[in-house]
Image 1 (cartoon, helix red, strand yellow):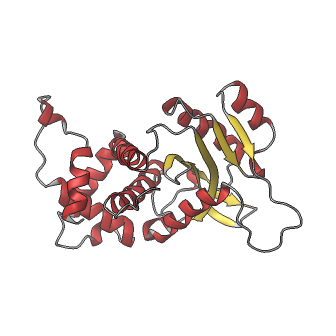
Image 2: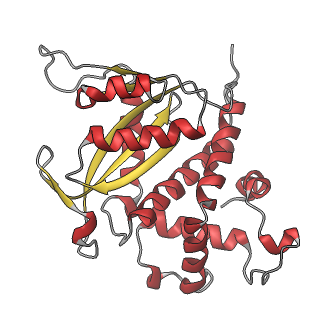
Length: 263
């Protein structure tokens, strides 16, 4: 992490309880060193025990990762970065439209049978990542399930979670796998319009579809993060946390990148 990136990230970090006078033992390592270690692990796909000696001990880094995962601090940190990017781009912090899709990835042998399955459509034995992004391609919510979980069943839960947090969300684009009763459920229960962007039957080869390319670009970024090229996490909550950490790396770089002036 560069000095410019740290200057942007530091004010957005969740404040530890001991700094608020709520007791607890002060942390022994600098947050910048811990964040660099987690970013190195996520971006390069190493094992926890293979953490280079330049970083804090691997067990301390993992304890930090686990604490932020269990208390949803990584999501809080991620959401603050997303709000900062939307403000910089002249958008409101709360989105009104999004895109939903899923991605099946192979799972490592460490993944148990209780959270893995076989996706017959993609011929993948592993897990499935269900994500909702805004129109800028920034993550609004993620849920990791077994690969044999249906997109409609997972979307019903995920969209409910996203709608509870983002009250201004009104429109969500999706592909043809989200048709059926899910459209009516979103309209009557969640007050969301689920609009299906269909692929024409006369299309041949790769064709960029309106709105759906936004979430496909997110999946392309996740696959460049080596820790996410295959699912290595024993718990689905850890897999979701790694997705959030991957997005924090992307947004941190984007915040320090020169922003072109708008006309």
